[in-house]
Length: 160
Image (tube, rainbow, N blue to C red):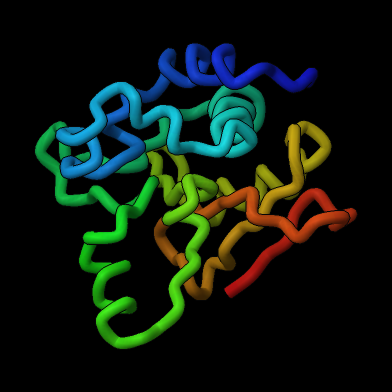
């Protein structure tokens, strides 16, 4: 797949995801549709490839806007409980989620284990190298991010 410019990436993503599914309620209330600009375009392009070419199933990231409780599976802002508790305790927290480089996904049509398996089998379709959290630390969700070290040669790195 040929890489796309950031505007094209955002428009393609909008076919499957509203911005409310990718950010928290606080971020949406403050920034609305402009919150698309907080994401690394490599992450959004990878999300499109996973949705269209590899997994081929609907994915859910944040569900707060349609009655669910999840709002930290995409972009994590500095005042969220996850981030602010680390700051209060003097813990450095540079999660890919805080930099717009990570998503945690679930699907009603496919288990996280199956999603990881299909991604590994189709690594050649990925537009960029990614990291995937292992099933031991992410048993019911798929975490993927584009925070791969500069010059890294492998398409997929698994971490716990």
